[in-house]
Length: 61
Image (cartoon, rainbow, N blue to C red; front, side, top):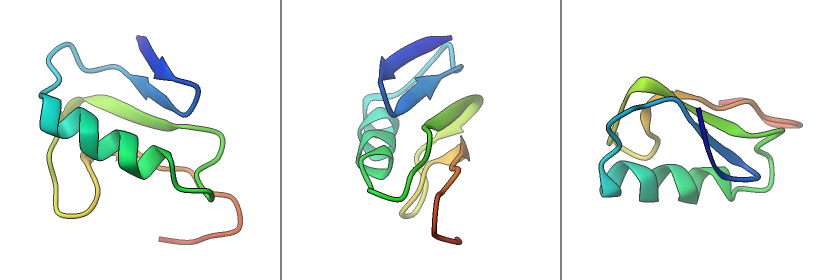
């Protein structure tokens, strides 16, 4: 497990730069709590990273 920052944790052994950037953008949203997690199969998606767990506080998706 790699802690990219306080709001983004990564379990993927191979993480493309575009996927990382997309996850960083999503993780910076104010309703993400406590952090976004990237699973081993994480890859670029439309709007949100496929293969991610996105817990929220006060929001539904």
